[in-house]
Structure formats: C-alpha cells, structure tokens
Image 1: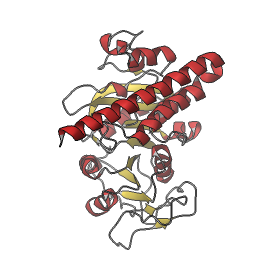
Image 2 (image 1 turned 135 degrees about the vertical axis):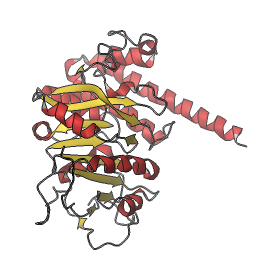
Image 3 (image 1 turned 60 degrees about the horizontal axis):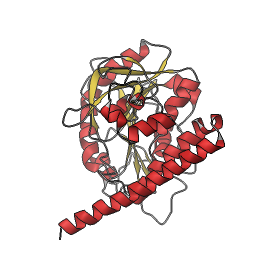
Image 4 (image 1 turned 45 degrees about the horizontal axis):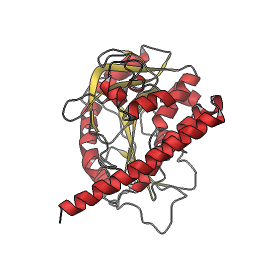
Length: 351
C-alpha cells in the first residue's frame, strides 16, 4: 500500500432500512450537513462517489455492529492506523443499537461511512447493506470486537492478490489471553463432525483429522493452506469472487452465514485460504455475551439446521434428516434449560 493517504474521504452516510418500524427512532446522531438518508430500497444501493472524491479505494472494510460501542472504538482506532498506510474505505452498519454505538462512531470517527438501521434485521442482511455501498476491489468483512495491527490488511491483500484462484482469505485469530481461536479455520460441519464436536471428542483429540475435522485439524495453526471455511470475524474477499457467488444468505439471522458463504465459494470453484502470517485480536461474543439469550440460542440452532437442510439434506435420506432435526432441537432445549439454570444460580448468588 502507498505510504501516504491523500484522498478526499467520502461523506458519512446514514441510512435506515425501509422495513423498519417507523415508530422506532433511529440511534441518536449529531446533526451534520454531510449526512445523507438513503431509503426506499430493499438493500441499500452502492454509494456514488462525489465528483471531488478520488477513485475507489483498494480495500473496503465493512463492519456490522449491535450494542458494540466500547469494542468498536478499539477496532476503528486500529483501522485509523491502517488508513495512514494507504487508502481504506470503512463502512459501519449499526443494527439498531441502544447503547449509542452509532453516535460514538459518528462523533469520534467522522471518516467512517455509517448506516443506521431502525431495527435489527440480522447480521447477514446488515452486512449485505454495507457491501452494497463498498467500492473497493477487495472487501474485508470485519467484526467490531477485533483489533487489527497496522499493516495487517495490506499484507493480507498482497497475499490474496498473489493467488488468483483464491476467493477469500482468513488470518490467524487470537483471544485476549493469547490462545488460538479455532473458529478461524474450519471444516464444514457434518453429522459426524458435529457429533464429535458437541460430545467433546474433538477437544480430547484436537490434532485428529477424524475427530477434529470441524476445526480443520489437518492443518496446523501456523500452516498456510486451503480450508473449507474461515471465520467472518476477518474475512478478506476478492470482489470479483463475491460478485460471482452472490450476497450472503439473509435467512441466517445470526451465525453460520460465513460457513454458508464459504460453501458457496467452493461450489463456484473459488478456494478459501487460511493464512496465519498475521494475527488479529478477537474478543469474541462481545455483542451476545457469554451466555446466549433465548432468542440468540434459537437463532444459533436454527442456523445449524438451515445449513444442514440447505447443503446436506438433499443428499441424505429423510430418516437421517429427521434424526438430525431431533438432535439439533433437542440440543436447543437442553442448552436453553442449562442457560436458565445458570441465570437462576447467578441471580441467587447476587442476593
């Protein structure tokens, strides 16, 4: 990337989703003359550059937030350092946060293009809104609970550009305690791999390609190689590949939309690369908390079932699919009961 950034940044953009409840007020933002309101379309249209704006940047970063005020500050501060190394477009789509995430972004990071939705329509839909505005040749889907060291994006882009058959690239993700986030390289979930994962066999045999297939155990954490899927927390995508594959499936309200997209990339013969030469800090679950609410727990298990129904059920017997359905929803009921018990214990301990 060039050493300096001399472009004129496009104005911050505010949008509300047309399906939103008009009775719900949007996140508070300070009045500014350069804010625009984009309405009347199902998915926000590609932003049109003003006449005095330089050509499209090489990379567009798209971040979806929900009650992420504290974590998004650290994320955007790290991207500010990256912007100093070269042109970088950053788009934040806020999904009706009630902690003034949008206000914090607008006031503290005026170089960010901001879209504020009146209701939380789900992660995939919000990400599609942001991608529709993006102008870069490369698209970086980034979680708000990440911190990206300066130079990381430029190096990742150079690596992706060097492999024309690779459609998307993921880097090494680490937790705050320095431990490896296994979700950054994964195998597609199958009936057996899910069974091994949820019964703990994958954890007991983390290096076994058989038992730890879901965590892509065939590839070491410091080895570069092709994997079934990477994590949506840091997903660098070639625009031509994204245009070929199509947008994220909005039926996934939250979770598994990244797995689904990776699966569709492979179906279109675009490879997925795990590249651990750079590390990104991932706080993980910053927006959803350590224990999922009933709504989020339902969304998680629904996404598991949707992925199976979409990619596996057509090739499996109806009897096996029925067993999978029973397994998924039994796990939902069990985890819901366990979460309720933990909440009750926490409440009792606090009295």
